[in-house]
Length: 115
Length: 112
Image 1 (cartoon, rainbow over the protein chains, first blue to last red):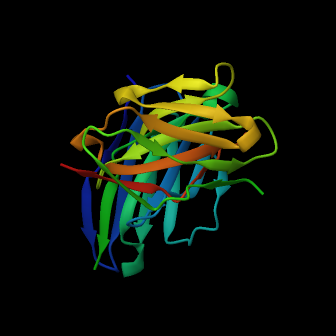
Image 2: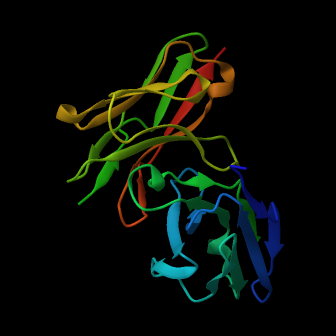
Image 3: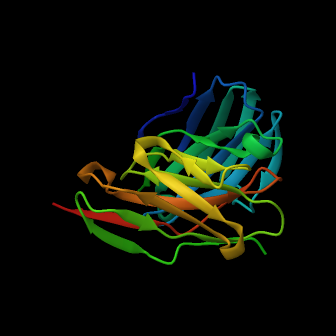
């Protein structure tokens, strides 16, 4: 299984709502990632988890809260978002450890709209 | 600092014509290079990768890329494009701290 799955596909939320994005992989990968992608731009890294521990936070606002409950699951909790947070949120995973392990496998993304 | 440059924001080719998308990188050590493709509203799919060995690498969907260390380039090619190849293409370099640096992307348009 070389698939990364993400739910939901689409999410519309108000600025006072709390919601969560979910990502799952069953490839035994040790590293998992959250990216934010605006239209016509490359993905921007938000967070990296390595062995279920947060290893990189790219100065993301606290209204985004990641969680890695186990080695296969990655969540992104959303609270008090702003309209400018509307974007495609991509999850990815990799084996890590350099060389061929750097290849990242991406999920299909969650299209988030904040009203 | 590490970087990836894709000089062409948009490229238009006719269906059946050949394609070359340019990518230049700046990286101090041995680069781990990737080309990803993204259709509108979708995730990124890996087309091909280079880590070491043969500098001409074959990928999926008939794509290939050639690593040229002397030119710091990793250009993507396809001999004959299909309408379904219309998409955004990202060149990227992998770092040993688990990060990938993406280029800004090249949007490929196909004329019928």
